Length: 461
Ligand code: F0G
Image 1 (cartoon, rainbow, N blue to C red):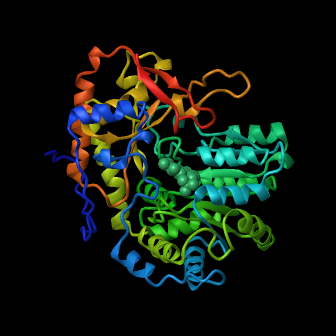
Image 2 (image 1 turned 30 degrees about the vertical axis):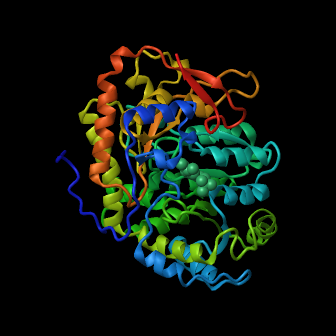
């Protein structure tokens, strides 16, 4: 039993449980080979601790389930949408709300209206679906994340920040007219769940507005970002999470939200905007792609649970526990010598694959090899965010070499206990201790086209 570190209280207890089991080692090895060494191909019943994602995997509260029973399933004018929109507007200050089935649905609708052919969208390490939707609308993403955000070991309190010099350069190079908008992702998932400071949002927004450019936020993990601001940024220690969240949104013209993260619901998404004209323009694509604009792919039950989830996630005790639990896992792994991205982000601990398996060549997918070994050793399912995910350069066909090759241990909200996480640490330590025998990594058995990490299969070299 590890006893260091996290002294925060856990502000809930379990009321409903779901059985899980650890398969015997021989069966785990059989399963992962049958899955083509791709953890997306595993059956969830064969996974003991599922750290694939924090998206839609959180545990709902009794209050959320109670609220869900009040769901109004009317096709148009649902009372549940009214409650959801009211809560969302009160929390964010954004007056107009469009529902979507999940984050990427919201992204598709918004980008179909905002992005014109050949325009650019500067931002901080755009999430993959976001990038894909911007490109689908004919636009291009320019990554303006600060340099520290691209290193796994450099310490910086806000590694999700945008580099204002890079942003200005991009705007000068393309011309303000060719900038569809600036996107700030809070927290920055692709950069390791790293937060963005209030000062950075304020400065990016002031600059963008001075050039007549709109600013949008990708707010999948907005409350976790607000908690980091409270903990780390001068002047915010005495502000409530609600006040910090409100200020964050004040710097934006709108947002897209995957509600499956900080909304703590299995499914759902939202768009919020300030401009009534834009709101009207979003209605038609919403009807085409998502559903009528008072449900957008969510059931009344989901909308009620989300309306309550958005209130619960602002609770400071919850956020201290949440961010603290992820930090605790990171600290335990570091104590055992496992190389991780530092500082630990809000929703996940990222193991640095290249440092974990220093003898595996970079083109043999070290981070994917870490994921495979963690499953074999402990029935733990992690996900590679690295060379496999990033794919090939569409112009040259060459494999892109990402700045970091990472294995992400993503923590679902309110789901796993310290004992579960200790099991993960023990598995990682055992794999690390045995690494010296490993000097070869993985090669493709079958390389999937497009977003290749879902469907590619591998063999061990
Ligand atoms: N933006 C961010 C920052 C995300 O992390 C995600 C999803 C999305 C948008 C898309 O939202 O899944 O509801 O369509 N991230 C998940 C993950 C899939 O595992 O990190 P979605």
